Image 1: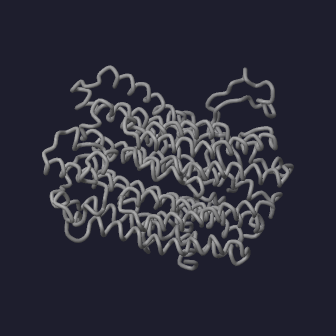
Image 2: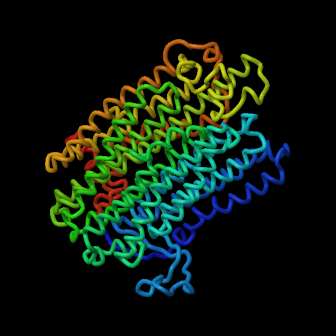
Image 3: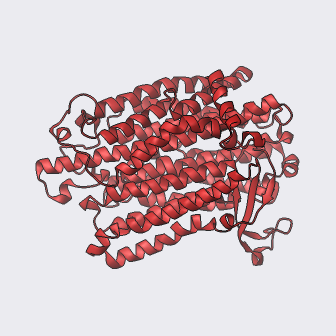
Length: 598
């Protein structure tokens, strides 16, 4: 949030390009090898049809990300780093050079980058592990898993590139790459009409938002003569910008975020995205696509926080919070009546993302209204409000990734039990969740009405889903509690100063109660009581690879209570070195704030 710009040259920064480049290069390699060796037993058993090629690539990206993050954190600064990867001097004519800077690709690292980079790289790695256990044990996926893993690594590359990009232009390029990959992965079973329809629906709906995003970027270019963060976040340039035009440009960009993060009214694509395999659902809902819209809005903070724009952008901050509040209640109400396990989680995603939008809207209003540059108390209020919204993004990503993988584990084992029970041929009975409830006319493996009593049969999965549900509900001392209640507290704080915010404030409070109901209902219908069908009675937890990410994310969600205090001030960009990462002062400050205000 605060701090200074610094261009650095170090081993980790110079090699950070490989965080994006490695998965991007893996895309054609997996696709080519899959085409050549398709059906070969060595390719199937040893390489897992590309899964064991993608995995070390994603591990390498995660390790490089952690090295980069550790170096940034080790500096103990509230600033940001800028580094150039490629510079195209021959493209410097006709406005492409701003004050002697040629068009190129670079890296921009600040506290927002650090958080999203960890979330994306960590979850992409875990979802890759889950995919090997999930995709490679269903015969319906035979001879086409290489296509899944190729599109998977390209999707991950798009998200990582967007997070590390040093300009809104490159953010948009990687943003569109993710849009293409979502189309390919949602429509993975393209021979099925509903999957093909869902893919087109997702692609076209998000394109509506992208049109407005492009308009906003053009307006931003017109205001600043550049889309590089180093230029558009410059305080002097912001001071010279017309507030009305800037608010309109940011509003257009926000519509793009609404489409990408499935907020009202561009929310219609997300439930249909369940037609893709469960690893795709986890990828879209937790690690990549829906977080992109939140990242875009968080990136707008320097405009709202600029002293020269004091009080000029509060209307847009309210719109952001209002859209979030309305979506939170609407999606939670729809989740009430869903019997499809994955659709409950889909609407839960919409609702929880709406919480984060509301939290960001409140934080942006505070940054634009309070004299936080000179008043230390106001500064703390803004820092913690922004940190709470970002921390809920972290908590939701970890919990929702775990929930989708746990649901995939349930559906996967239900299919195997159904097949073993009825002795159908492999093609008719096995299959990804793409076929769940559709391929077999008499049995829906995704319906909670066919489950029940699975806790004793799938203890790891049941525990993971219980912890994930508790985090989403915001039960005390689990990750989601600290962030969700922080959002509610700060939204009501704003409502006391701006009566318009009573709408989103009331919505997030009501939504919190509704979340507790539909998440509890989901867990009890799936895992509690007695098995409702003969298939549920035969389920066993035996597929390798799948438990690894579930156990890992269970631990992360449970330990978030410790991360809360550490991260609140750090992710928000607190420039005071006394509140640096792993600082006792920073941890206590975050925890004490929550105890006082929740």
